[in-house]
Amino acid sequence: MSIATHFRVADEDTLNRIHEATLDVLANTGIVFQSEECCNIFKEHGARVDGQTVYMPEKMVNKAIESAPSQFEWTARNTERSITVGARQEGIHVCHNNGPIYIQDMDKGRRLGTMTDLANLYKLAQQSRTCGIVGQIPVEPADITHSLRYLDIFRQLLKHSDKPLFGYVGNREELSRMFDLVRISLGADLTDDAVFDRHRIAVSLNPLSPLQFDEIPCETLLHFARLKQPVMVLTCAMAGVTSPVDPMGTVVLQNAEILAGLTLAQLVNPGTPVVYSPASAVPNMRTASYITGSPVSNLINMVSVQMARELYNVPSRCMAGLTDAKTPDCQAGYETMQTYMMLAMAGVNMVNECYGILDAIMTVSYEKFIIDDEIMARTACALKGLEPLEPGFSVDQIREIGHGGSYLMHPATMKHCRGFWTPDVSTMDSYESWEKKGGMDAARAANAKFKEILAACPDSIIDAETDQALESYIRALK
Image (cartoon, rainbow, N blue to C red; front, top):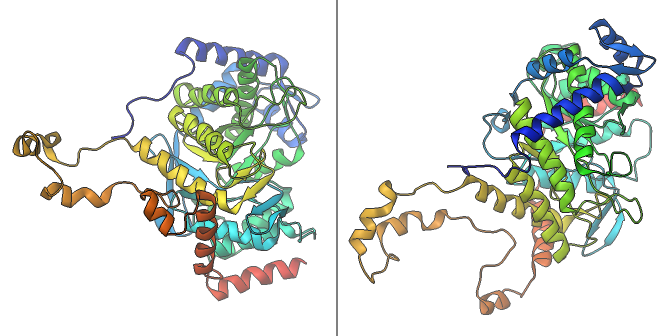
């Protein structure tokens, strides 16, 4: 029994007014696409195009919304790990991070990430009980600088995870090579597009707020949509900087950018899965810098999640589990739980930037990765709600035990007592027991836990022959 209702920020009338305002922006202000190919696609389908500015008629946008699927199956290399995304999914799908530059732990402090750190984060995600989707670049490997580094990064992903894959944006050549590596990992020929008859790999791409798509996101969207691979249009506008200072104005601008990407994907290949991905924020207005811990930012994106769920009937994804804290301290804990729980209660289908994020997505912490895994597990338990363990809500037991009795040794207690949720790094021990075990706080317990997990991880989860084929492909290009 999941929770009976979602947390709603806006009423139905407000949602409809946002949609009408969005259609006005798309039709009369337009969206800039820095791609001649994209402009021609819009023109061929009846949109007015002036230079690089595309003006989308209401009928085109609404038809695209109807064409976008309400759910899709995301096939993992290990098909037992495949997931359903959208209308009938269970729980929330949690994705890996993307974008941090620095890595941090209690032993070595904050430093630039390396390829070893990148592989470690893929390994931790593979072992995580809550992370269902792995990919992107959870930390930039500063020790790899050559022009084909993206292939080395993607090879590490394929070596260390068999969960549903997240790819990267790029130009046509880079994307073609990335898709070749997917084919090789599945034992397919490089010319075999039948591999992509299933939804194998998704991508998240960003509009250039306000109201623009530059060349690389355009090429990425076209490449993925032609093979009907899932596309996530993620707007990350800053209220008062790259979008209106009015939070509801930011909702409208964000909605326009996401629907523009959705419309293009449906014109290229109707039925392409598009995940509505709001990620806008209220910045620090004293410095105009990006921050992640404001509850107002969550409210902006919660309205957008409502748009996806209640009006458009498409899957949604949002950044959650974020914090502006610099270490895994109290601030990191309450901001992470705030951002994650608010969006979870709003009914979002997927969340990302959830594992170890600190300092407004600049840094990822090994310890916080483990702590965040527990936060996600706690929230999943809350969203699952309560299922009755015994018939009739245990009325027979209540009658049997009567007044002043004990349920401790009742057969039903013996049957179910080990099934309740328990933490991985938090303590539920008495003070004396906790002290006897070393008296570790959550951060120190997480430090020991991530080292334990990595020590037990294999060097690779793919067979040597497949790994050699990946390496040979990349070496030939180099």
